[in-house]
Image (cartoon, rainbow, N blue to C red; front, side, top):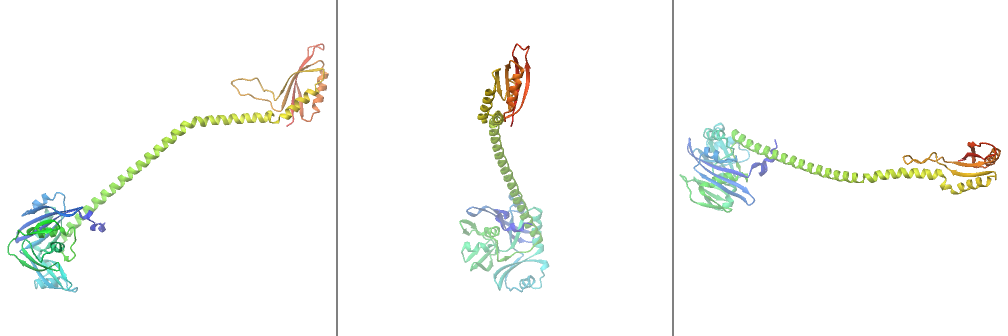
Length: 406
């Protein structure tokens, strides 16, 4: 799962240990370890350990960095053989050790050309004891190589025709190992400048093994061991889920923060708009009141006839001209009040109505005048609201209501 991430350095890690295992006998070996760390400037040597044990490495490797082993010494055989694309691993093994079977040996091929390779072999029972101890100590041994061939990527950086390692002298041509000569004993002392890093000859194999973490060797076909494959997958899966987990956590954290910022922005805008709305609500209320008052006043103006001033004058003139000498007008109201004005109530008018109050000497004179008024086209009806006369010698007081045609 997520195997496409394996090629990324973020998943592979920025730190790796290279460990050279030199077998002195079947049950005895010497370990030389070197830690490489990648930074912006490149890859640098962080720590070196000589004659260290696997138990000590387990304690040293607190960050659980991957370990790349290069195994040499007694019990490991290297031979240059002829190859082609049709040869099987059993065919290669037979060229190194006739009549041997693959079930008893691990085999590694380091390609020199399409027709020539270095083949390295080791008995499984010898290497399996090392793998079992790696597993017991929970060391992430992600790859195991045989011999000095992990120097594949370092040879061109060293740029020498002869390279001395812990146990061998290597002849170099065209950036490839063309001959391996045993020194017979552990050597040391010669130093190599690799891109500014000073590496001693006895640290060179460990350096090459660690470097394979950052620059994958393409000419080496390393040994295939089920346990080592499991170590490698476990290490990569652990890193993948850690990186992906933190990535998702960071993503959702940023998403949450962004949502909170957006929500705060919207809330701030909403509060500001709400404040503006509340501050202007008074004007809105006042506007509604003014609108209502305007409607009332417009209705009043329309109904009062003010907009038809010429007709009001006409009605008043005709009434005045028709009054006989026997009748005295005291009051004349056009669109009179419905009732007395009360400060606590609205003012109401009786529209299309004329109210006349006056006095007359005889009621017959009033009747004749009413008949005369009814002949006007604008008069719809005339009602006598009241008529009071104590005796014939005193004038009678009257109140008329003229209804105007609409």
